[in-house]
Length: 146
Image 1 (tube, rainbow, N blue to C red):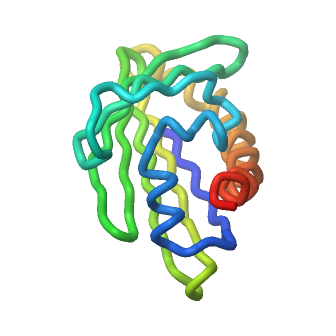
Image 2 (image 1 turned 90 degrees about the vertical axis):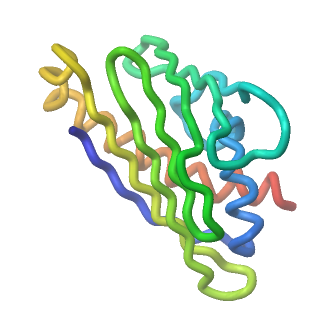
């Protein structure tokens, strides 16, 4: 399993940050690896909502269906799956003030079958992707919420 964790501080109220990030379709704005992300179904976003996410990694595209597994005021958990991997994105939010939020983002990748053999070779690249995501997220939030 590969685990990465990054913490970012954004100049936005906690509720606004959560409302933006709970719609996983916004990953195209803040996740450098996401090529497309489309909501499946309609209605308000809630626990159980799903998205089809297409990402590019190491020059190849892969598709996962993500489900919003947990939706609380200060925590979101998304679980994405395909035949090769289960990805869990766990976001925990802390209001540092009325207009500043700290986000701790943990991503875990559990590879299946023979794909597990690639984990040692992919760990560093996922770390770089996490760094790029942490760098991009505050600007994406600022652009969307301004």
